[in-house]
Length: 437
Image 1: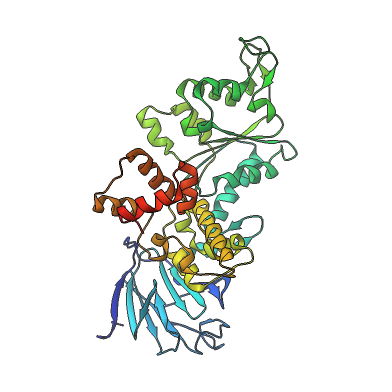
Image 2 (image 1 turned 135 degrees about the horizontal axis):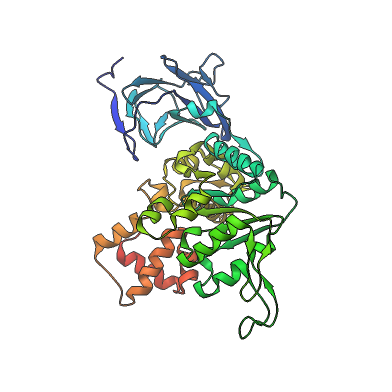
């Protein structure tokens, strides 16, 4: 079927052409303003969306028409969406369509009808697992990771977890621990990036009393504190090369030697996490190949949130607490790339909930979102682009750059001011002069 002459051709705002979906389908993510996960496969025919029970994707949403819209996978990386002249309209990636629209596959294709949202995507991953809501929100892609973690724990081998910042690597150590032989032991966390280089050996392996001036008592290191349990080494990629060699010996021999002391046996299982590409670090000589090979025997890569969009409505609902996210709010979040992943999403939703609460409003709207998300202008780097275009800088250039960096990170002028130590009035004046919305 070809698009009619009156059809509009749209391109996803995050247009990254992909191969044809191996199993195209529709994932209902919001039904009558409530988060759900319902999968309907497209089997060579148009899928009808509406509140009538006969529709392929039937949603009990009073804001939808009985037969609201049709979606059809045309092949050749395209979808056709047709609105049936509905009162509340059909929105594709935030744009109201008239009649029909043909959309090139990219990431994502979000269709909003009334108070409901459907994601058009490859649904083959849902053959592995459905979305699970428990202590964490776990979609099918993340469930695969969790299964590998549990398997590694049961085998009693160390685990390496790679993935972008904020993607959820910090969930894995507890999951690993409960499935391991050391399930009743402690879980000890050490952030390698937060430990000064000259203190890192002591933090990892401990110090014997009298080893150096000021060592007036034995101080056990992280490996000993985690004995009979699990040690989570976060940001492993920042660990200095000389300590990497000592870490490798501990992993191979299970012997820990504190500074000034003698070796002792430990039963410490290790989960190491990094947002650094360790294979690239090995090629550059920044990470030991033998340590990488030792840890990578069991290896997972946590997918970024933009590859797990089915989790977003549930994460929003969990974070918003008593506030009710509007469909437009959820839609804007689904269309954003979330370079900071789950951590960034939670920060943004918590901020939106505070804004709504201060206005005594129990509904989260797009007005409660940072401008770059609400207006779908792309990732926070948009702030830098606007400033570059304006060409303006205050005399306090370093403070201004720090303010921009903090603003990009948290999305809140108030929080950025507090982090950098710039008065709020000054910050707003600077941002206005620079043309930052």
